[in-house]
Each structure stands twice: as structure tokens, then as C-alpha cells.
Length: 575
Image (cartoon, rainbow, N blue to C red; front, side, top):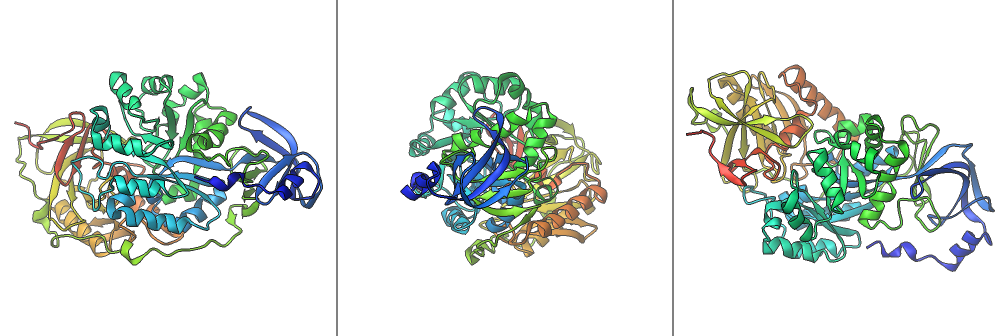
């Protein structure tokens, strides 16, 4: 894993000693050092893509930074590139100007749709780019027995990914009930990680259940629901990743743990971030800004975004601007907005003033990654009718904005209830025709319908609409439209498609620049809010998590309503 980072030649050591000129000397820098959380005034010598020393020395080229701030480039401790909707080179082009040069990527969205071949296609597309990718091997495909993905990801698949030069560990182990119960298949997957990291996913798990989860070998979590939970996990030696994505946001809520207990075993992550948010606010830099607004010091936030993330994932060549480390660094004229003036990767300028300065190798997506939406037949209004009658008591999913968790409520059903929305999940991988139906509170569609094939984790076709006859007609129209464009997201009102975001790569991503994709997402979200009436900040991202059967409390898959607390299918109609 990144085994070449120490293969330094005698010629490089001569440059480090000052016996030979370095390639570039950055003069008069104000350098952040994450190990001591201080700023040092120094020159920075770079040669062969490596920092070879601090202090004045002979150099082929020099650049006077005139007291500018310098930090290590940023590392996302946990994310899913597929959630940005950007194909690999487009993702790199989007985040490099914001100062991110490395990510630990869990490709389990692709793994759920196309299995090993899809993940290996992503790894191939990442090669040769001015960026450091760590790929984790997806541990839970399917996430649980209640989901119907397009592929499985077994122990042999995991070993294949771990054998890659940039295989960093086992991806988030979401089936925490199975781990805690000692499921032999899950324990075998954890054992396969060997000395590599094992990421966790255990919202609300504390006490003896957490003890068992940790004893199984899980090392981190990013799904904490409360301050007491994060404190317990830190006390028991677990790494925690504080995140700020488009819909999933716990960084500000849990910032107190850093303010009171420091940065030990804490890193920052984006997890799931829409392209419009990357365009407007950036990537890890935005997480740092959110941390500062929540009361975390700049130095603590930088430490979590650099040296801590590097330490956890074994990026031993990253995280510091220090002798022997890869020369990934950001230069700032001000630390107020965290928009870098210059971004270096391996000692080369890759971005300046918010724009790329290099051409990126571009591997187009394979044809096998396309055409992944398969419905048994076109859908009509009858496909979205339920057996619920007025006066019956039903279980309803309560949407909680900025959280992946949902509530579970009992409601007396009435026709055309304006506070209710209907939610349906249609299996789209094997054309089984299987559908699950439920109802939502808090999504807020007053009219119309939206659909998406981005639907964690199995990524079936999810549709939400107004609880009216016209709403059900719009659900059928928008679902058929998304299938016809090969996957993606769309908005419908009165039978008319008002917006679409085509995502033909596995129904998850598009091979277009972030600005174009961001505009499509922004337009679609604005239509949902302004025309259909939802108040959600990220309605499509929120929708995508309503089927994730390992996040409490109530979710919907193509197999029905899932009571995550009991880890069982539960009926829609009560009694």
C-alpha cells in the first residue's frame, strides 16, 4: 500500500542535505505543522515531488510567498465518489482547486449496482491522475437482507480490492447487528482486512453492543447520533469522523467533543456531497469552515483534515509538509475563506486561483457501466396504489432534515392528506417488478413527484409524490422517465417533466464537468422547493437515504417497510 513513498534516491538525499540544488524553494512561508499545531516561518524545499527540507538553500526555481499561509493539502477521511455524481476525472477536477488532493473512497454504491467489475473500472479511471486515492473494499453488499442490489460483493471480491496498491481497508461495516451477533461471514470479511483499517457504521450503538462491535475489529465510525455516543466511542479507542455533506451533517452538532477533548483520533469527512455544494462551497475546505463556525479552532480543524486523516488510513506520505513527505500543499493569501491561491500535488502546481492548471488523464466509462435500469414493464398509476383505506392506522416515516436517521410514527390515514407524501421503491436491476410502498411526513411535496436511481444502498428506483390521484400519475410519469434516460433524477408536475439530471453511469454518475452537473442539480432542487413545495435543503439526497435499511428507525425498500430498530420487515397497516 503506497509502498514507493520511501524509495528516495541518493540524489534526493543530496538535495535534502543542501549538497545539490532542490527543484523549487518556496520562500517566506507561514507553514502549519499539524503534529504541534503551530505556524512556522520558513522556506520549503521541494525536489522530485517530495519535501526535502525547511530553510534557505540553493534551488533551480524559487517562489517568494511573501508570508502567505501554507497548509498540507486536505484529505477526506470517508466519502463515496458516486454520491458526488461525478465520474472519477471530473471529481478530481472539481476538488483539486479547493485544496483536496487525497480521499479514502468507499465505492459501495458502484459495488451495489455492478459489483467487482464496476469498482475495478473506478480504480482504473483513477490511475495516472494528480491525486491520491485510497479504495476501501465494500463490506456489506447488500447492506442487509432487506435490500435488493444489482450485484453481490463477496470475500473474494474484497480480497481483490485489498490487493490493489491503493487498497486501504474494509469499508464501513453497516450490518452492525450481524457483527455484534458474531455472523461468521462478516467476521471473515473483517479478518480479511489484516493490518488494514476496518471502517464502521453503527448509529446509536453503545454499551455492551459497542463493546462487541469493537472486539470484532471495527475501528472507526461516522454515524454518531449524540454527543454522549461520540464520547463513549472515543473513550473506547474508536476513531470518529465528523462529517458535513449535503444531507448528512453531524460536524457542527458534535463539535463539542473536539472543543472539550482535543483532536486525538478525530478526522473530517464529507461522506455524501452533491455537485452543486462542491461548486458553491467546496469540499474538505467547507468542512473546516463549518468546524470553525461551530467553535473549533483553525489549528484543530486543519489537524483533523490533514495529519489525522493520513494517520488513520495509512497515507504515510501525506498529512504534513515536512522532509520526506509528498509535496502536497496549499498556499493561501488569507485563512478567512480557505480558498487556496495555489495547490501543489507532488510538487507540481495543479490549481491556481480556483482553476486547474494541468490536463487530466480521462478514461471514459466502459459501456458495461451503462444501461443499468431494467423495469419489468412501464409503470402506470395502478403501480402506485396501496391497499390503505381511510380511517386505517399506518406506519409513517418521519423525515429528519440534515440527518440520515428517520422517525417512525402512527397516523390515521385520510385521502388527499396534504401533510403526507407517498414513497415507493421499485426494483430496477433484475426487472422483477417488485415494489415497496410507504408514506412520509416532513418531505413536504404539496404537488407533483420526483424520482431517483441514487438510492442507498441498493440503488433501486425511488419515487416520492403528493398523496393525490394526480400525484400518483406524476409518480408513474417521472419513474418511467428516469428509466428511459438510463438512470438519474427527475421532477414531474401534472404529467410534465420539469427537470432532469441524467446519470447514465450505473444510474449514479455522469461524465460531465462539475459546473454542468451542479447546474442541473441546482435547477432540479429549486424546482422541487419552489414549484413542488418541499422545504428540504437537499431533497434528492434526503430521498436517497430513505431506503437505507441500516439507519434507524423506519425505512422502505422494494421488500417493504423496515423497522431498523428491530431489524425486521414491518407491515404498513397497523392492526
